[in-house]
Image 1 (cartoon, rainbow, N blue to C red):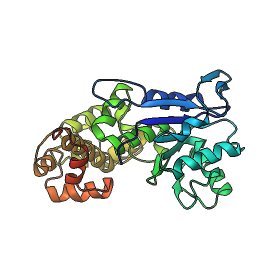
Image 2: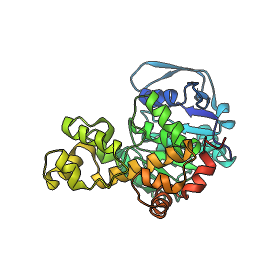
Image 3: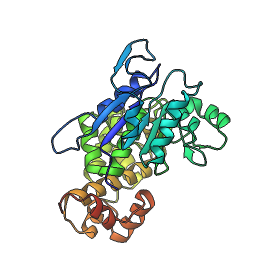
Image 4: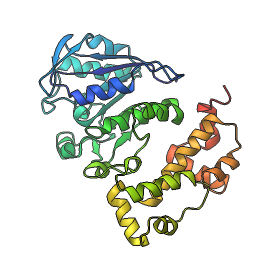
Length: 319
């Protein structure tokens, strides 16, 4: 199945302005060799739609737009404790029934749950309302700590700005890491965040680390991925003990040095697989895995496919 092109985001009365802004920005037209999306907001009755901050949002399209979109997104809204009208739930269910990819972030997941689209599936939402989602929909396996949960045809994301994580994940999944990274750079966002919702409850993500000394060490590590990079060496460069470094790293980034490095190496391997013709063995060396076998093991575990299959699907060098 080709990647999605047509994207319709359902904006109910009381729609979250942040959520609407996130999807509008991510799927905006950019050029520069990036995908062009046919994006539209839609609602129950086209016209001025009240937002959660009281400002009206002009929405030109009705629910019929959901009937033709490749990707349908249910946006968060202020009155999420009251299920959307039956015709909206039917439209969401019909979109999934005809094969559309369906997604939601934050409390938009309540709309998918009310439509029965999360039954028997794992899902996430804003951590504050995860308990309520589980209570109201016991047939849904709620994961309150996840930034996003990918169940194939249905994908849910956490709250607030984690909508960016959801959208970038969908882009990475369907178009590859190079496209997701390019759009993330355009939006001045980290292309991927490791860890769960806890990392942004009170702390920044690694790419935006506000600890100056730690940020210098992370920048150095990005330039030396081909080296082993033990935690002891990173701690030495930060002028800390290993234990202090690990504690400060977790406090500033929400994850461990090992998990951060592993994610960085996988992401760099993705880019090299997409944009170069380098042998897998050489890519493994350049990103610090040492051997093609180790790269393959880690890649399959975290991306679900071996490196060569990923290259066949997303390689730009072969096109």
